[in-house]
Image (tube, rainbow, N blue to C red; front, top):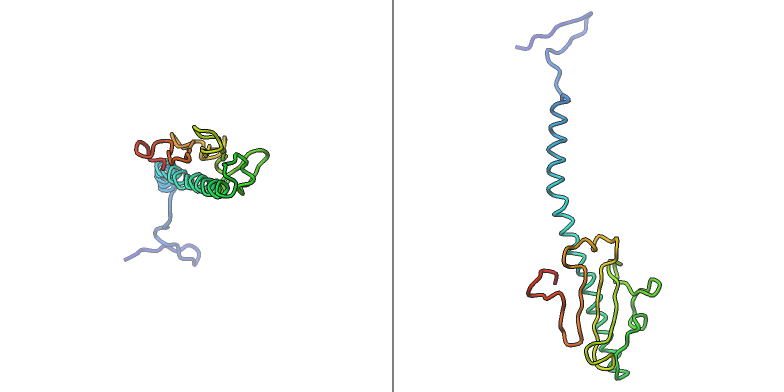
Length: 152
C-alpha cells in the first residue's frame, strides 16, 4: 500500500520517478565510449567504399583510351577528350575524391598507357592507409598489388 501525504488539500506522491544526474552522466559516458570505438571503424568502411570512385574512374579511362586507340591508332594523355570532369588542369573522379592522370606506359604513349588515381589532399580518402594511390596500365598491371593489399 502506497502512503500519500497531503498538503493543503493536495496529494503528494510518496516517491517521484525520473532520472537523477548520476544516471544521466553514466549513460552519456557509455555513449561516448561506444562512439569512440565505433566511429573510426565506420570511417574506414566509408573510405573503403569510396575506393570504388577511383576504380570506376580508372576503368572508364582505360575503356575510353582503348576506344580512342581504335579510332586514332594511338593513345592520348588528354583527360578532357576522354570525358572527365576537369577542375583547373586536373581531371577528377565522379565523386571528386581522386585526381586522375594519364601517362605514357613503358613503350610510350603511342602504344601503351598508365592511368593513375591519387587521393586529393585534405579529402577523407587521403587518410586511407596504404590505399591513396592506384594505377592500372595498358597491360592490366595494377598497383598497389591486389594480391598483397586489400585496396582493390
